[in-house]
Image (cartoon, rainbow, N blue to C red; front, side, top):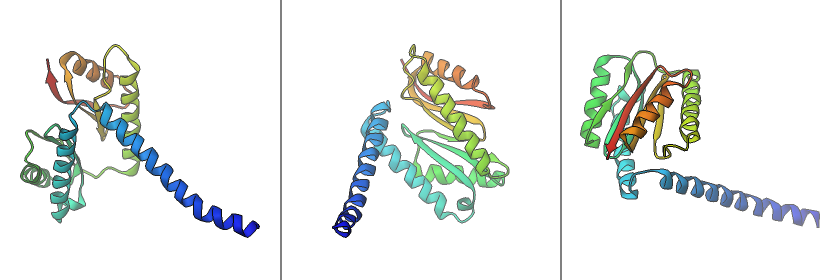
Length: 189
């Protein structure tokens, strides 16, 4: 009888675990779609645009060895990360423009050493603190603001009113460890 119970658990447990992962993933994805101020179709278009740019960068032998993060938001493309020289920064911009056809291209790649795991961990911690500070203040609806941190530089994206953009910049500037705040907002009235 004990072998029978063990066998049932061995078969059922992975199935239930998989369902849990799918359910949790669905909730997270659903929440991110709801909190995003873009239309669902725009979110889908941005995902396609990001994937096209990532593929083009990956197809370039030199660029694929750099640290390039691609963010597509409302038809715009933001490039952050590090490349080893200025010509690779310029090439990454051209490749992103040709592959993604963005409305605006923000090439914020830095020339220098590639970020270490420690650097990226610090960036994640800064992003977490900026997001939590933005959500803490209920005076402004900042839930649709996307925060990206690269090498202690904070990039703020979203479709917001000017007063909310100014508030978000001020919040981010006052988070410990932030070197620079870059506005990549689409301002609405």
